[in-house]
Amino acid sequence: MPHLRSFRPGDEPALADICLRTGDAGSDATGILDDDDIWGAVFVLPYVARHPELAVVVETDDGRVAGYVVATDDTDAFEEWFRTEWWPRFADRWPHPAGEPSSRQDGVLSYAYGRRADAEPFAAAYPAHLHIDLLPELQGQGWGRRLIAALTDALRAAGVLGVHLVAAGTNAGAIAFYERLGFTRLGAPADVAAFGMTL
Image (cartoon, rainbow, N blue to C red; front, side):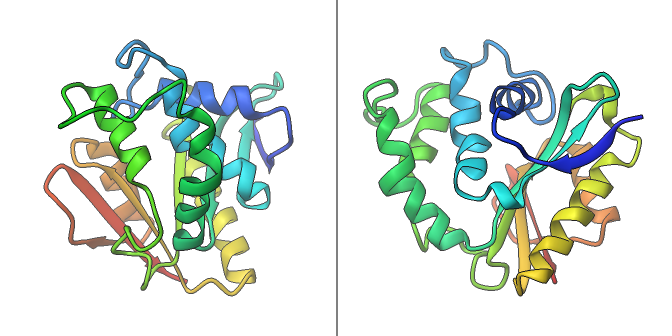
């Protein structure tokens, strides 16, 4: 039987792989970008580097990590740390795209280079934010609900007032999932779906 456990150092390759295999609005993103490693470096690995205490994984009965939730309790502080400390180490490997993004990879990299404090409009009311991903083998079995519950319990215990997240506007399954969990839909551009929860 799968079970939840806290993140442990050494889980990073599995988390990056899950991020890749669910990166295309919940579907496998392998090969969409020129370098598959970008997904993990932007969307999961910085969170466990800065906030390992806010990372929970699902471990299968054969010892594999097959799902996770990661978060920050202070979006503005995290985004500034991402801009000044985390992302600069990748500048040589993935330079800032010139001009308007002309590919999916350019778009992801432009997003990464644009992250900074005060850039996220939902951070004032919902200072924490999260990313959650489950491999298909665990979907639809309540593991997402358990991961969110474990994270929100930790955030409440830390005195955090609210949490938000952003999903692809085309990810109907994720949108329905967050609505079932009691997240409130927030105003956002048509291509994304944003949600907040007061803690």
